[in-house]
Image (cartoon, rainbow, N blue to C red; front, side, top):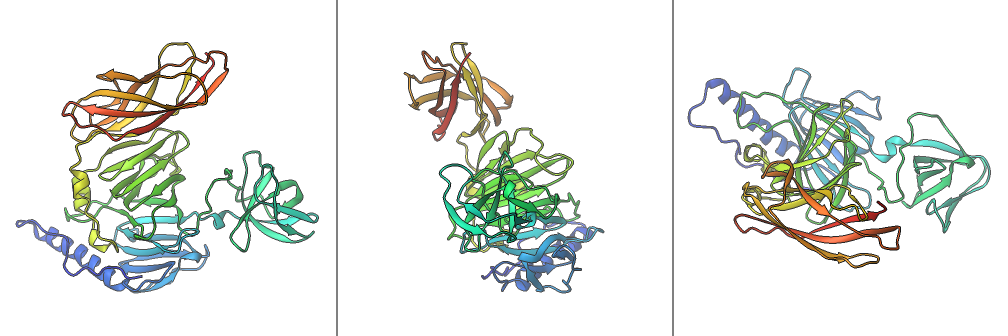
Length: 448
């Protein structure tokens, strides 16, 4: 894999600056050029010291081995990585992580003072010992199809359980996902606790899932990149699923990520798009915007809703995009003036109870007033349904640039006791005549 080498420093200084800022900007420019050159030949599934100080733990116990730019190590044995010393020294590391099932690698650039903890599925494993001859099944629900066997006394690694904790998930040597009954095995220990997952939950490779902490360093150089991680998919990959601080992120191109415990996880979409999913909400995040996910003091999503907002142009201007393997131009996305529907909060509409307010989240970069909401019926399991048009829909959260509109939905069950999902297509129009792309929305009609 070849990382594009910077031929000229991309950090341009203002004509008049103080000497201290000149020196600091020169140091950052040197760091970027050094990192690009030192890690230009990084291999697949490796971590490379680009510049400054990089601390790492391998197999969660081996001392750091990075000494000079260009030093590399396998990502598979990497537990934690930190760029930048406790004193605040600027650092850069480059990683190439290969997601499960992919032939290409995702590239990460750790910039400034950041720390990543590997949360790959393999890090959560426990050893299970078969108490008798047992079967391994393709899924924990009927039909039960055997895909392997264990003899009494055989061991296998398990990495998760289902919602009832009656089934344990494993990965076979050929990569297939299997499930075995928890009562048929003995686990090696009680910690770490196995996570609860659905049958559709992905298996995360090394650094495909991670916990991030980024500092908020104040630099004397006004054009220095902020602390965070640049992430880019190769052109050959249409999409990849990441997990960042427990938040599912489906990515199609390039993002810049930051996270502060007790603050927020911010996912700035520079090119392509992303879908950001927490337990309470899924947000579709287009290029030129960023998702802001509130974090607890423990650095995980705290249950509050993700909001999507316009990405500040100055944040993009400070990023060293020349480092990225694939050329992108985020400028066009920043000029977008068309409203975009980014998500609908989970909504259940009660039958024959009048209107239920379903919050419809949107962004409108130019801040023009949303003047019209058109709702068109798509399909439902049963019943007769009609669309609606709402003039001047009310903003119930945020403002005209980024917030939530009130979709006033009604339903009637008739002789049924539940109908769902009822699917709709929604468009918004603003006062300048800009019309959003149709958004697929749905609700369940339940008893009043």
